[in-house]
Image (cartoon, rainbow, N blue to C red; front, side, top):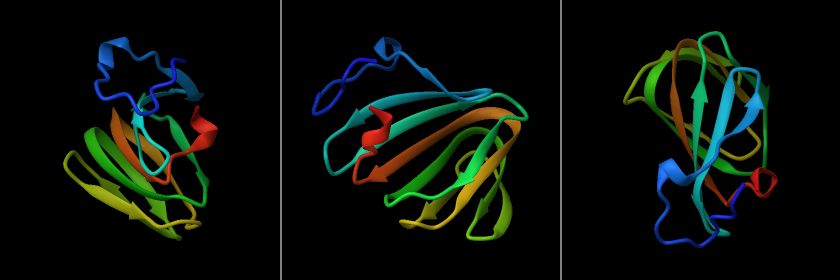
Length: 113
């Protein structure tokens, strides 16, 4: 994967995705030390395993439908919905209809690059 750190222009067609989990492809779109934007492509039935990390995360549903669990609460989300996951809060999802999630992290996820 190319290092997109501090790049002003990043074109999605030039960014190679990587398998993040079965049925999930991750594309790191742009980042600095303080902020990161990541696109996740989910196949129907794919799982974003329950996890937590020391980053604040906002997720925007671009397309598809997902059942999210955040801090023990489950809800179904659709295009246009957003979720706030503060640092160290357990969260995960199941993809109900194939789609794309856009994640913003602060600070950036060093484990993704």
